[in-house]
Length: 431
Image (cartoon, rainbow, N blue to C red; front, side):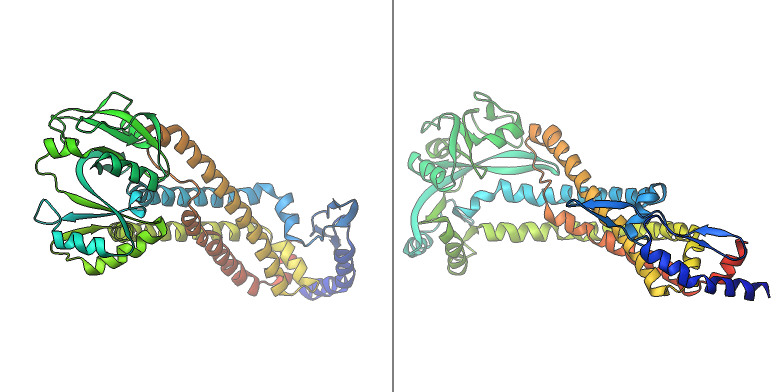
């Protein structure tokens, strides 16, 4: 009988309460005939927009979010930390790819052909290259080698031995400029490096770059830095005459240039089909990208698996946290259901609240990640000549599943509670 009486009293106040909800400017309080009262809706705050006063609906998701920061901020904080964590890890791993493509990015502007099992490219292969209409310039190049420090260890870097005409042609094609010092003198043990390489190695003008007792930067006589270059790609060069006289086993490669950088990739594709791969090796930017992607494929697979586990764990934790907060609000939703609000509309309200939490958390997490990565780049990476791109959009794509899965977990758990919700029983327990 008591249950029946309470139900009748609740239904009797339904029309009054719904009118209060629709026209409230101060929040509605549902008064039951049993003498108890329960404040269902937070105060509807007046907003000023373009000089006009508007009312915020008391059932708006913004109301609960703004008036219950103690409950909403922890969930947003979890999302912020998760987004920053995932984005920073992906950015750091992607810096490997960025480093390789930056170090050897000069291959976008020139094609290198080296001999196999010989010291010179065969004459018939040279003739094949010259016959191509896209070929405009060819220079003999001989390599020496140094290293560049990266976050994954030392990487070999080619020092191209070119004559003065070839050096000027390559500098012009790659958009490089002499930043300090001068270019090498033919026949002298001198070297020019891109300024980022010099910074990476901690070198200044006059320092020895290659030397006899070095394991990874060998030269029969010390080679000193006489100039630095600036521009979009890294490059290192020395005198071809010096390499010829002091590196007797250095192969004579061919540096091939086209009329414009746009034609370089077309020539690469043509030569890749025409040159005998058993007698020559073609070094192109397309092959560099392909080999880099293949080499990092396993690493990216592991990263994807780890991030998936992190996303699942954080989503499950956040969904359970949202469910706990919902449980604390059962009387509110029970009263709303009792006065006639459909379960779907209540679920949509919860969806709006969680969507706001995730959106704000994702945005703050992205900003936090940008701030942290820029600090790492300026304070740690740049002084050491290491590469890092805080604006790596691929990293933020990896964070998109976070707000989506958090919302799905939370809505699934809360939806199950709403379907089995018995408003009258909850109201009875509050008597």
